[in-house]
Image 1 (cartoon, rainbow, N blue to C red):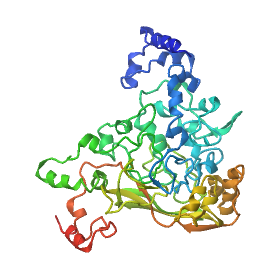
Image 2: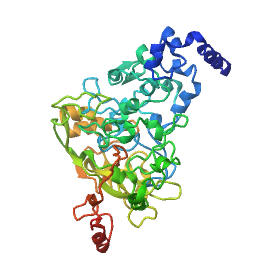
Image 3: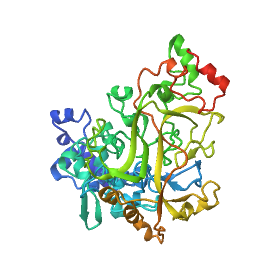
Length: 499
């Protein structure tokens, strides 16, 4: 459509006859989608309906993490700067596999927490992941973009969570109903973001830090996700202090508490003392007192599911069904204080500050490091007995890496086969099958192995207005392990004194 045609459509939509009734206006919270009446009259045909008035938006969204599931990265230990990296090519410990091996994994054609089909939350409805990352989509691929999953207030998740087979192949569905299309919001609501970012493929919340009015002071105050994660042409910044997510649409944009609260957020006499902490301690460290979720996961020991047999109480928005009795990995779920590690921002001035395995990189000696709360995850994953990691497609650069040269090949089981049968080898065979098309096959012999080191999942939500009391840290039984943080014995004795 030409710019002139688009302008004509916008003018028509602005005419008096194209406005909502007063009741409808109130229902949409005060902002009315200019195309409301047109959609109401002509129906909704998917992304092409949106592209008539928003021709640039379709191109923009296919240039984001939400489409590619990866971005060019920097300062990630063991990976070349500028290479595309993200959940498209990195194994997810919680899901226990790769996206290419589990894109449409399901239980009888439906998404469940036991069979975690990664393609469910991809912004399009493709039968396979968009590989290689960064490659512009074809017109047919772009036409699968689901605008409403983010921009509809009323969205039927069951439509999304059901597999559909058509001329393009088998893929996850979409809610293209008129009801959804008539509930378009100007920016995604918190509920829309949480459709994908809330669930964990587990009994509890993914990060143990839910963003709801009951759990987070900012959510209670009415702040939207995009209040802090400010969008630029559909690209969202995730912040620079993440330990577990390499991809970032806007890596130079800060998403920090100081953006709103400044570097001296505490008033008064006591506030002066508290403000002295902010040089070495992140705000989240005091203001996120509790996290929960999986702390141990063993994919080598499938067990009958007795954990996922009901919704988590925190799972308010996606309502992913679960089926008791299917096979899941042996897991340990805990709730308590976070683990604390040193972090520095991933900026162009730091080198190798982030690990692609989400390991700790910084220490007390790292200039500018602050103490951050994280969730620790110990993993027993599935590895090839004979092949090395550098032998996998696209991973040849690890051959010359002293830390990774002898690291065994990490295998990717198919979750659907794993959950239905509990047969680990059969699940690996199914999961590794897509790689055969790339000319790569695994040896056929697998082993469970604990990943050396603890992976750390960043936590930034579930913020409480009142932070931890002084003696929660400054005591002999405080929440922080000062020794593990690198403090000397003399420093520890001073830090453990009641304040």
